[in-house]
Length: 448
Ligand code: 5AD
Ligand code: SF4
Image (cartoon, rainbow, N blue to C red):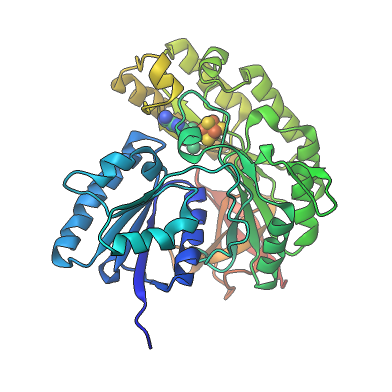
């Protein structure tokens, strides 16, 4: 048998990157590569990278140093950088002591076989062209990240919101939506293969715009309804939504479909209208909080998670207090919280001073984290006594005698291991909790 080249992909950053790596694996498997799960076995190592904060990029530079040590032992080894950092730092990555052999931006993955050939002929290979159309919609991802139960399905790419702090519109280009037919086909195929959960992915899923098989314009609410109808045996999740366009119509679709999960991720970023304006978020504190009130009214059992940035340019102590109070008003179930990191090339880097000291950013972030921990604990305490449908994901990491899974609200639930398997749906009554986990007892189970 002919020897296949061995490919190892390491993925950093958001779920979109994890989903993209599965596209990359598919493109290169067709080109006679075989995936391996250890860097040490590979002929080609690709790092799928993230540029969202400076820390994410620093991690990659460190990793490159380490990989170059491997290269010294194995001169045939090739190293490539793909994804956002490739897009942003092509020149730097192709030169210097840790120079890489191949660079591919997020819209250039179809070109990888060609780039590999260039690289193998001894040249440096690079493609960082952004596209107006590329959605990889005909490529069947190799689902090597998946546990066979949950899968990501990318529905749109790029972002043109231009939040002033954010590098994504520069690294991932213009917004474009994948055809509804191919999304629905992928979801039904996943259901046939026994998957139980699908997450529709995009930088801003509410901006989804495409036409259906009859040529009618459809937006995200209609797409979600179609997916829910086409895959009734699967849980449907989606991420991420922009607060400026979370219409009631979409909230009603979530409320009216049992298989659409009652969880919304709605990045607030700041609770101060002045800061939100400087961030170019296109909504005020009041508008945001009203959307949360509507979500909780229309979907009474909804869980709301968010992203928050501490210490954006010009943020005063008063602005920070407004973030803390907005968090309490919104009563978030969960939050991803970050210190502001200045990104070269963004509007904020050009127009505003990064004038909040690192010390103050750290202290504000700590206060935000402490507030969220309190809110998560309160939310979990409200769940004690309730019964939830849980999709089992596996044996709990802390104790072999317990299983863990998630409820529709995306909260982790642990309960005694009664011999169920990953992929089973069970009903669990909540008896206790921590701020991160619900602890329950099995009530009943059903096969699907
Ligand atoms: N600094 C800190 N956090 C950022 N995010 C995006 N850009 C930055 C930045 N420059 C956060 C936002 C976004 C999440 C994915 O990352 O909160 O919603
Ligand atoms: Fe970045 Fe804003 Fe687009 Fe999100 S919506 S990717 S924060 S520019």
